[in-house]
Every structure is written in structure tokens, then in C-alpha cells.
Length: 469
Figure 1 (cartoon, rainbow, N blue to C red):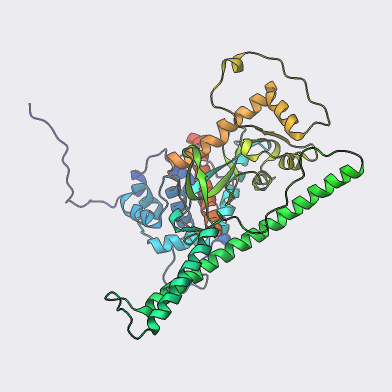
Figure 2 (figure 1 turned 30 degrees about the horizontal axis):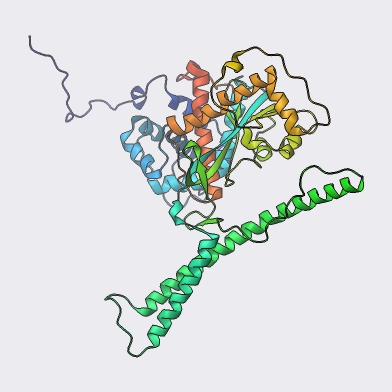
């Protein structure tokens, strides 16, 4: 019996115009994205309202294009442009139009306010549909995302000074060489004026790098000096009252930047940070996320910082959560966020309870962890914040609450980095990096909302018929 094969004919044209909706699976995330974005108020979009120039792509189409491509792991504007030709779902979003990479990049760069508003609207939709609780627990964590810059384009404060001194000596040597009548000729194609100009340009850039590092240091020094003076004043008051303050007197802050302080010529706002368990140092940003720990796993707030650790990030990150969507009762955070000042500040008023690890906790459970134990006796009222927190996490309730941190915020970063593939920012500078992290968080929430709603968002189901953004 002869084998029967399907006839693959790429030459014959279609007899009838195709309906692009027939090419898209019925249960697909694109239907949810399009229907949600179509109900967005367009007044916040950046457009050429005078109507001059070429026709513009509808903002709703451009936003859907960016959200879908970010949610499916395409972040560069050239890759998104290519997908408008090669990806059937992207062609469906664009209705067979093909915005070029410049248009995509410009739209992304100019519509920061739009992405922030859309982020809030998605949370409003989640609250309206009952998948986001009004009151509950949040998890806070940060992850290092590579900057669009190489660590080899960075220079330290100490090294910059050494290089400036060395280049100045070379300039002086070249000037003397130019003044000599019997100067030894240079290699073909080189000239002394060009070599002097090249070194002076390098000196100017290094001096700018040193100036930026010094400006950053001045800002930090003012804060540390104020903290130092406050601590010394408190200790002096204790001594006047006849009490001996615990521990040694704090050391005054240094008067000049550390030699290791860095400046990157490609992206000056980024910093060299230790990246994950590999302990490798990379040019990065610290991306923060506040995640719902009540079952939805939605990102409720997000921000980007260039601080290499999280000691000062607890309050600023929690404050990104809109109180309209979540009244925070409990905060879960790892040991990187713990400080007595931060915990005291967050628990002031008695409305919020913080569960933050005091020490680094090993993964896995020991035999002792499996044994049932009675809760330890509570500490005295006048004990330190660290002792109270250590006791809190040793109670059965504290252990159960803190478990939620690993189950909520860490999987979110896993999905963003592994499933979505976002491991490096495409944009540069803190404002643009913050914009892109907002867009990444929005794309993640869209993915998550689609999974939460399920079959409600089928075409023509009218699941948002009575809901307006």
C-alpha cells in the first residue's frame, strides 16, 4: 500500500480572504490582553494630537503588542518588529501591520505614565473580579537584573585618580616631544596633537566620573552623619541619666569616598553587585517586587533601586502598594531587609506585623524541625527588636507565616527570569529602567490574571462587559 501524504502547496493563492481570528486558538492569552486594553482610557497615551505627519498606530494596539511580547519573552524592539512578520499571534494583534523598531522603542520610552496607569487598572480589575483580597499579607523581595552595560566599562574612584595622574604625565611627555626639533617620528597614521586630544578627552571623562562619585558620597555622608550624631546624642543622654550605653561608641563616617566606589560610563546609574548564589559580580540593578501572599501571586507594587543590598528597601518597597487594593496586615521579608529601625518604623501604630528573618536560614528541614515543640516563652517587653523577631519566627504561627514568603515572591522572580526570560534591562538610566520593570511587572500580572480567570476570557464571552477601567 502506498503512503498517503498531505499536499503542501505554497504557490496557490487563497480563494477567499482569510479571517485572522480563525488562526488564533480560542483559549489564548491574547484575547484577554486585547479585551482588557480596549477598555483602557486613552487620554494618558502620548500622541501627536495635531494630526500632522504620517498616520499613527493606535495606542491600544501598541500597548497590547508590548505587553504580549514581554509576557512571551521578547523585549528588544527589533525582535518585536520581527515577530510582527513571523509570529501569527503578533500579526493578529497588529492586524497585519508592522510597526518598525524605532516606533516601538519611541512608544515604550514616552509612555511611562501609561504603563503605571495600566498596572493599577489590572489590579483594580483583579479586585473587582474577586481574585485579589482587600486585606492581607504581602511578601517583599528583590532580585538582581543585569544592566545594559558591561562591568568592564566601570572605573573605581581610586583607579580614576591613578589614571588621571598617569594620563596627565603622558600629555606632558607628548607636549615636550612636540617641542623637540629632532623628535623621533611616530608610527604611520599617528599624530602628536591627536594623541594629546585623545588623552585630554579621557581625562575629562575620568574627572566627571570622580565628580559623580563624590556627589553620591556627599548625599550618603549627610545621612550617615545625621545618624551618627543622633546615636551619639542618645548615648550622651543615657550617660547623663546614670545609665551605661551598651556596646562601643559608633565610629564617625568617613570624610571621602571609598576607593572601591564605582562609576560606569555606559550606564552611570547602575552598580556592580553580587549576583545570586554564584557570587559573581555584575553590572546590575536591584529590582524590587511586593507580591500578594493571599493566593493570587500578583505583583502589588514594584520599584528599582541601585543599592546592592536591601537594608533600606523595606519601607520604600511596601509604600509602592496602593492602599486601595491592599490593606497590609503582615509583611514577609528575608534577612536582607531586617534592621531594628525598619521593623520599628513599619510596626508603628500596631496595624502591621513584620516577619523578617534575623539570620540567614538554611534550605531544607532538619530532623529537629520535624519534631513538634511548644512555642518558646515570650521575651520581656523591654528586650531588643531583634530578640522579639527571633522569638516571633520560632513560634508555630511565625514559622507558618514565614513559609509563605518562599511560596509567593520567589516563584514570581522565577517566572519572570525563566519562563518570560527577562534577565537584562534593554534601557539605560534609572528612569528608563524603572519604566521597563513596570512594563515587565504589568506583563507578568497579565499572564497571571489570564491563568486565574481561565475560561472566562474566551472570545465573545463578555466577561468584562459590565466592567470599565
